[in-house]
Image (cartoon, rainbow, N blue to C red; front, side, top):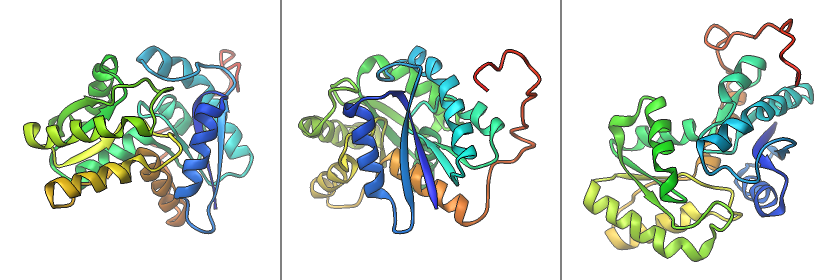
Length: 243
């Protein structure tokens, strides 16, 4: 089985290299993971505008993946840029990390909090949660205190403090990491710290890990997205220059 991770930013070792290493560590035996960056877009996605700019090339990458014989794709960004268009364009499963993580959180809890990089992204996260029909499950949005490019292990202490506070103050029952691809299993470290503090299990959801295994499950069960819900677009349109 071959799953392609579309990393919706321009190529860089800081993001794409670390992301590929991380996603390969999540994959089971027999699953090949390849990561591809964008040719057109931004160096990181830190606002809605960045996400919108990424969408056309994400769709192109999904089309190339299907042509390459890849079994499924994931989109490695919490805002799922290009997800709708990619699902319309191809027949293989395309899983957005944000959608996968949020629905997993709703299955594992009744209230969850999302940890994102910085406060300027809070409104985008709230809109994303609302888009997937889960606004009533959102306990809060918390910040890691670092930009996408700077987020690393040194910020775990601050994130743990934010997670402890949202469980106590906002009655959060699960935590969703809103930014991944750091090159190591940050979610597991935070989950371990929360269990040590509260003395019970509180799930900390890594969107990349969940999306990868959700894509794997779709392939294994021979399922993909409904073409009634995601009908194929008309290729006669001259505007589809990238296609």
